[in-house]
Every structure is written in structure tokens, then in C-alpha cells.
Length: 376
Image (tube, rainbow, N blue to C red; front, top):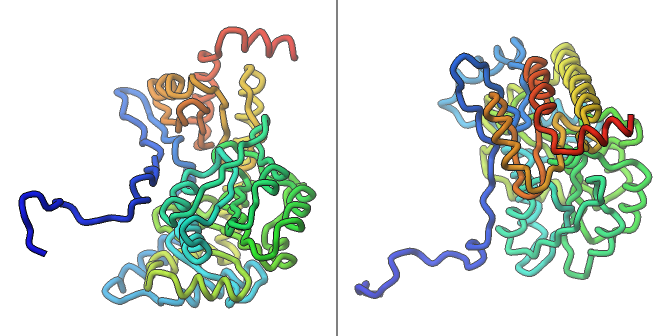
């Protein structure tokens, strides 16, 4: 085609891409003179990597002139041993969010439906939109939980993918055994259900089941886990999917070749060594104790905080979200506002959590303290 002055100057892109929402990452803390600042906006693990993991990373870094193992064989073997599953049931990618995108790609044609709770992880509507699927968002209950009966009712003949987030990011509650088992038993067998357990290691509610055990009973269930949170490898981007063989095989075939770096693979193997993982899980226990302390302190002040089962908590402050996030930021605490809905706060170092409680006590809306006093 001959180019003329009236010829469009940009390539033709898929029309649906104009409607893809942008992912909004948690902002870093802004430096304040004379004040230590803390980033509580991205659900990162505040602990540095273990020395043994850093050693493995350094060793792998010496070979970055070579491609990594495209099968991630040693890494997936370590994961399979840890979870008690077969290597053939696993697939890996650069974070569980990439695996989620692949699941949409291998299940959805244009116009098919993806059902998920809302508000949940921001990547879900992005994933559906890029796949040119129709996003079906089912509102959370008043206590910030998945409304599983409503999600079940939302499934139609066009539904190809259902996403469950447990614990739910950003609101905190996790799905309990009875409700989840009833839901999985009722979903049509040809609909793939994804259980996103990015924060599973932080759960302390005994009624919350382990997705690996549920997977054994449901051939249309995929479990997603990540090494970004509890294992503190967010910067290396490693996610793992546990799926039944046909789905797992398709995920592996649709993966980006050499996607997970040799450094990331080595770091995961080192993290799953018995002594290293025990130390990492001690850190998780510390963060869980801090989370419970902060949640109790905020509720005592008068804040409405839903059940928190991840390494974060949710303040459902509605229209005050951006205003209050700015107030926390002015005190050196970068939190994650969701305009018109609430604020997600990552559980971090003790000093950060102490300051959060002090600052939060000064930001209560009129009547909150009175209500808290009456209830106590």
C-alpha cells in the first residue's frame, strides 16, 4: 500500500485493547527529611533474602551467558516433592499472574466469560480484557468475602474460567472449606476453576483448606502459588500452577520459552531446602503475629477491618481512601488506596506497624471512636 498524508500513522491494534485497564502498582514511600519511610503498598516481604538463597543466586548469576533450563526441571522437582504431587502436574512462569494470563489464553475465545469476585486482584479484569473475554464481576459480600452462591449463579454456557482469590487481595478474607467444597461440587466439569493462593502461607484460620488437597478431588481445579510473598522472591518473578495433566501440559506448551531465569530457579530450589524453608516460615509466623496485632489494634481504635488472612489488611473507608492514603503518606507510610473503596496496608516491620497504629488513631472519622467506646 502506498502511504499518503491521509494514511493512519499507527499500526492497527486489536479493538479490544483500548478497553484493557492499566495495572496500578503500589507506589514507593516518598523520602522525608528526618523520618524513616516505609513502603506498605505492594504486599512485599520486608525480610531480606536468606544468606543461603543469596549464595545460590550469586552462583547462578555467574552463568547468565547461558539460557536457563527451559523445563525448570530441578525447580519443579523440588516443588513436586514439597507438595507431594507429580512434576507432570506442574507448570511455571514469571509469576502466578503470567500463569493466569496463560489460563485465559488457553480457555477463552472472544466473547467467552471469565467470572471472578470484585473487588479482587487487579490483574483479573486485565487478564479477561486481553483475552477478549467478557469479565463477569460478582460483588463481594458486606464483610468483604466472596459471594460463592452469587458466583455460581453467574456461570453460564459461555463461562470458561472462574477465578477465586483466597485470601482475597485486597480485602483479606479466605474461603473456608465447607463453602468452597460446595462450590466446586456445583461448578460444571467443563469450566476451569482457578484458586489463586498467592498468600496461602499466611493463613491461620483452620477452616481454610489447602488448595493442593482440594486439587486432588477436582479435575477442573487449578491452584496458583507464588514465591514472591512468603518466600521473599518478588523481584525474581516465579509462579507455579498445579493442574491436572492435560491442563498442565497445555500451560507448558503455551509458556514463553526460557521464561523463568536460572537465577530464579536456583533461588526457589535453595528456598525449599529443609533448613531454609523452616527459617522462611518462621518469618511468616512473625508477620502473621504482627498482622493479628495490628488488626486488633485498629479494631480497638474503631476501624472496621475485615478478617485478614494474607500479609496485609483492608480499611474499607470508601470515598476517603485517597485522602487517608495521603495522610498516611505524609507520615512516611506509603499505603495502597483504591479510589472510592478502601486502603490496603501491607504488614511490614514492627516499627512501621507501630507507626501505622499511631497515625491511624489520629485519622478516625467523627463518630468512629464513640462507636468503638460503646461497643467495648
